[in-house]
Image 1 (tube, rainbow, N blue to C red):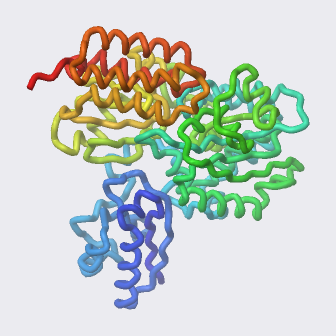
Image 2: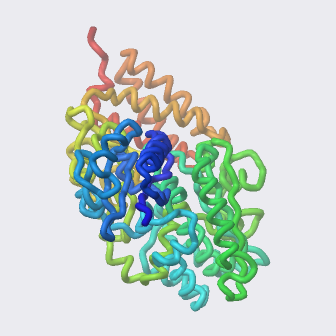
Length: 513
């Protein structure tokens, strides 16, 4: 009987040498005459343990990690194929504290199944949600999503059900579902991980959206830097179509839904939904004026649902288990779970799916293990490069959309980047302005010109030139960008700048030689 191993095919694991580890394990097994069956799966999210190797033994999956190619001979000698003790052995993944305390809903199958196998997906509850949706009216599916409390996981946190109802109520000869998979925020990787580790959950979620609003065509707009995700998505889509879950007769229902992957060209501004639509239509990626909203006149002027990856990948469990089940997770108006991504100066970087309400301090220390440098964590940027810098005094704020708004921050996509006490926050503020200047589509003056002037003003402050008046000028410039920018790029760039000024004023003071 073959020994069964589960090893990640995730891009992060590949960057850490997992393919070399697999080759070494196969060679060792062949030398010993041990038959192997290796299933390449998504990452469990514990990046500090990658490459992670799980050995199936007595019906359990026993984890070892990080297993580098040079570790394999000693591991095999110690009894890897029989799940014997070793310094790299961690027992069952489900018992590792980092993993055990999570609430895995969207990521329930990631790391468990072959990502592109329809049979394994179905065996683990996949497509139960779609089958239920097909037995309901579109209006009832929209109501179920509304009642679940699901809000957009891309940053704006707009209620998903309301957006869908607008599209559902439009009368049109064609409607579309578009997935914003242009995950360009620093410190974020949950979209990539679900697309590589469980792409069929996204395929199913988009099909549910199509059934709900009457759309027959979907597009996944994927950032060009994600070749592994592209490969997994294209294979998953082909397999879903072959199994009857996509096409002109979805599950024998008579309903049509087709799905394609379209690659972006590396522009950060395409994360903004109207700029994405322009790009998808083959035009220059520039932000559109609103109204009309994309839900009324979106892709090619037709009613369009636009949601991000995690929003759409959350739908299968909502339709499978019901709105009440999903809504029981979370707090206030923030319902369900969010995959928080831990990055920056932390000992244990990775992905943690938790219900809303967990605090920043819990994520940083209980999961992240504190700073990798061993120094105090001074600031944390939440929500990507346009997110505010949160100081240590606010680390006990629960991760909740309204709670973070109250402290002048945002949850956004759930990306968390930590900095220790050696960080220069004036330089971080400058980086935010420079990032905006580089990535601006150029359509509106506050963003295009304001960000460039912002870099110049911060440079003067750092150089100690008329610090007081330039600081006031910077604040005034931020107010202009916040109020006058056409989209969130220019409108949110002030968040990291003003938060750095507010919480870390000493870093902007003239430096003494």
